[in-house]
Length: 322
Image 1 (tube, one colour):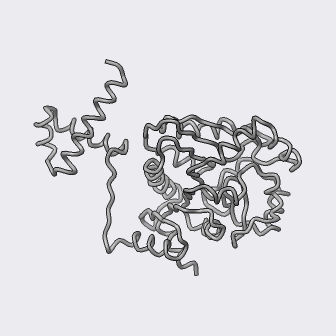
Image 2 (cartoon, helix red, strand yellow):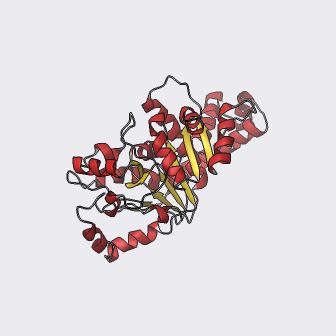
Image 3 (cartoon, rainbow, N blue to C red):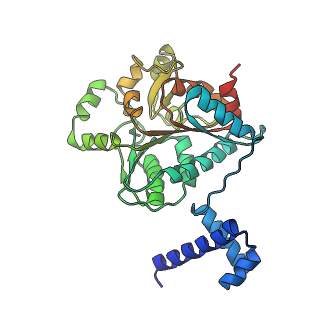
């Protein structure tokens, strides 16, 4: 029996078991009898159904604090929020993993055939890629939103690993962007953007249906990759400080009020300018940790977000920053 046939049979069995368990309220013992298998086999099929997205479980309650926060964020900022509940005393690493897991499941529910997904590499999106739920699609594309090279590395291995995870999960074509994260000379960037090989990738970016990104911040306990990966030197940090930058999306920097005009480093950056990013129909921001509050406030002011996935503590601070 070929592997694909075996996978199809397992998927059909898992779907049937899930329908009987979740929609018909049958016990696992009853399902085991009906399917002529052991109870443990039924349990594994139900686990497979959840892991692969055949079954999505939601919990709602009028007393749910997270749901109340989501409603308030929608009312105040006009974005759809998904607040991930978690205890106060939890490390930022565990906080990120829980938010990333939720983001990965939501992303798979939005991604479909004939769609282009833009991916901004970074610590947060790398975590999302490790949890992404498999969903077979057709004629779909994963495109890298910004370059990853610097003076120490091409960045290809780091960005490629993230891209490959999304591509494998969605059976999608991958378009990498083999350029530096930041150019030494803005004129070189202008010239390279005219090259047909680069322009082709830029054209794919222009067709993005979904963009998924984290928020860069030099203040977080888990530093953004752009701030620890050798991409910026002391002169760059001084420039960002003078320009009152609070964060970045895909290595494009912005201020607390959401403005990015005349931020010097943006002339050398490889990510899509914020005006282009705002044209993407669904812009998924994944962020965790109260240290990224200023970065999140700036991104919301800039209108960069349509769907926001964040932890409960950050959501609370966003609504009451005092």
